Image 1: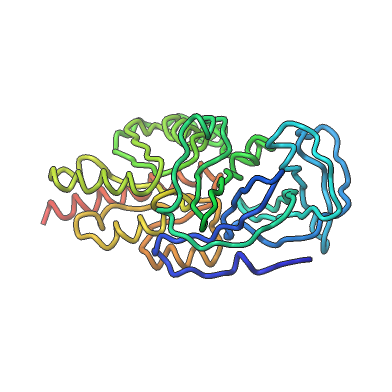
Image 2: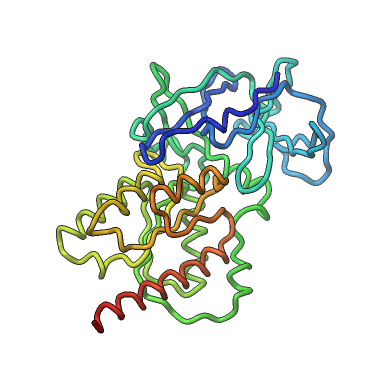
Length: 315
């Protein structure tokens, strides 16, 4: 029961829409962005691997590709979950790697607006330790959107942002340029902040989604101090209320903000996503968890922006 190509569904760029694949575990509805899904397969025999996270079943090899299998029911509940013949593997592709997640069933796909996804409060999400990044209204159902990046980061920390990459860059000068970051994952927000501060960037402001960053930009415009408040913007793609493509499109379509460099920093950077990013005017696009690359991009874009402003002032 392979179902390939769902992640190839193309949404018009910058419309703030998402397609959610709904699946069940113990009768509860969960969701994943279709853009993360490579295919759906019937569960297969898995080869156990020693010294792994308790939720890692092991590996299997469909079509000459070795893929790690995560027992998602066990991860979510912390308890053994009997495997059933009709279990499915959702094979994902993000952060430049493939991981299969065992689930009970796949219900279908809903196309909704990011405004239909609410950020769960701490009583539901569990704060930084939580794995729900949003609650989506899909028809009559409420669906918990899981933070698959957070799950993989816990299971295999070496695949996530590594502050050691920043330390390897050596001693750096302090940089007070105001950097704004839109990122919905509490864990990744903390890791990005720590990495940028380690790299010398001390003037950081973070937002849990694109909508709140956009509101803050409009407030700066009203107060007439945009250039003083924000020098560069880093944005994720997947965020409740407003995604990164929509945010970038709004910024680059505005005469007040279009001069601000925008960097898309996402686990979903593919050739198709790069094309979409170019369409909405992103200055740079790079894949998580390449934090050292991100810092190099910030250095370059801010230097270029300063030179442009200086050139304009000299004329």
